[in-house]
Amino acid sequence: MIKIYGSPRSSAGRCYWMLEELSLPYEVMPLDMRNKEHKSESYLQINPNGKVPALIDGDFVIWESMAITHYLAKKYQSPLAAQTPEEDGLIMQWSLWSLVDLQTPTVDWLIQEIFMPPEKKNPHVIEEAQKKIPGLLGVLEKSLQNKSYLVSDRFTVADLNVASVINILTALKYDLSSFPNVKRWMGLCSERPAMQRLQKLREA
Ligand SMILES: N[C@@H](CCC(=O)N[C@@H](CS)C(=O)NCC(=O)O)C(=O)O
Image 1 (spheres, helix red, strand yellow):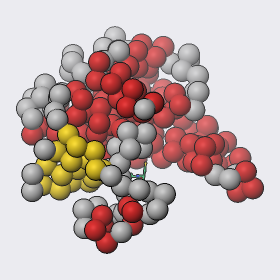
Image 2: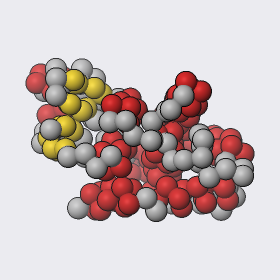
Image 3: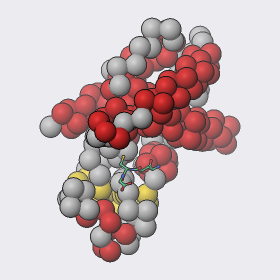
């Protein structure tokens, strides 16, 4: 059975979402991050970065959350995977954009807002993130003009990956009202039964 390391509330969440989309059975592996088990020799054999998520499928080991979502969709021949090289290129385009461009300021903000002790908080970091995010959401907004989904006319890995980053903004109570196409598309993504199962896992 597929084994996954990392909580559904972490970057692993998007991998749980994909596992739920594919209705695959999986086992959640215990990893006590408060006791730094993710830095233990045994876990570093699985993910040498000492981070979650990591996934084991038979003898195959993979880390990096968006690589995991790609792998699962492709391996289990899901319609969420690319069906042509062009779709593959666009799925990569959106996944890399969301991880590198959009997630970076979003996570900077999240860390300051949620995880940083008050004496170490740096409001400048939040201000800088808040300056960058509207331009990035503007790119998404234009791309979703007259389209239900990012690539092709169906929900793909691209939508799952990008929406998983927008979910962090939602957790930060980001107001999406200036981005109606993004809001409508997020509605479609959030209505998916697999996404709702992920939310339940997050609340458990
Ligand atoms: N780009 C990586 C980021 C992984 C990552 O930063 N994971 C965090 C949890 S969301 C983590 O394991 N942090 C522990 C640490 O850095 O020590 C991915 O998407 O898989």
